[in-house]
Length: 209
Length: 209
DNA sequence: GTTGTACATGAACAGTGTTCAGGCAGTAGG
DNA sequence: CCTACTGCCTGAACACTGTTCATGTACAAC
Image (cartoon, rainbow over all chains, first blue to last red; front, side, top):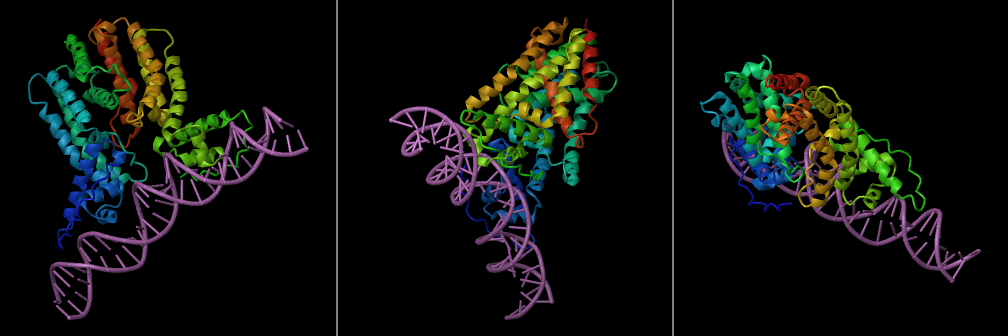
């Protein structure tokens, strides 16, 4: 696949700089993930070849392929949260929520590989509670930021009973589900763009106040 | 693993009954998919062993592993649609929509393997437009039934602008996203149950009329 | 220098999807 | 009856995957 032109053999790192390889592996994995769009296609041998190192060198810094992927997720989650937050700078709180949703889906469609690694859940939960914990703590800030944005909306209380968490879960489910369904547009041709969908709901909400 | 106890070698089918093996393979694949909950773990060798046949015998009836999975999806989609429709027998249209959503998520959580095969989209779209077409035509009735249920709701027009398709996409995205996020509960502990989420939205909708 | 160890490699194992040549058995034509 | 055909199925093998183990290499300290 993609015939990764086994880049020139990387020069050996000096004594204390072993962690450099770790970073290069994470970056290479993230790059391949972004190119392919499918976490399953980013392979140990592919990542190693991209860095210019033997496949086994990966196991000096990661116990598993899973652990490498979790490292990638931890790194990409910060950029994901930054992208969402950048779309929500003040203004009408309800409109800000919509812009957050558009940015959310925009990220998911622009970087499907990264998004699927973040929220696609490559089933690491079984037998690896440590990795599941790392995934949760990595993603928590992004989720909490959404709950906060909901809480700032004046009509939040009326949008979904009393609990802003319920509203946040509803919106999160909607954008995540939309992003996941829209990924393969060929299958479901009648998907409107997410802005239309969100604005329709927002219109319903605004009629409430 | 599951150590599939290579069942006794299946007796050879008589002359014209070759299609029997095809059906047995689909059923075995569906069974393994339901047990594991992960489409990736249903393997050609595993399915063949479950039926009691050599792995290569599968290629007499399916060009790919993908084609086998599509056959499973086509079969399970009918039961999925039947489950959803069974939850929507008359009554208040809005409450019927909520019951459809609960049944949707119920199916997804009760049979995660089947659900993921149906809507998880095991990335068959590239290079195989024929399989993508079969997936779309298999799933279309279920989607159209949802659009119809939305259209029957008296306030549908006000729920999402004028287009019931927009409302359907919003609800579909929400239940699909919820089902996908709730699958790994360990990661996101604060997911309310889908009934609460849907009813919160329904309350907002009912306030409109 | 010698030695120790951090950094890295090559060969190999079990698993995956898939291909290909071959064989077995029952049925149709002579 | 008997030959030959063909539908049903198998075994060995290839390329790929994640992972382990024994090996090696080169730098840094003593």
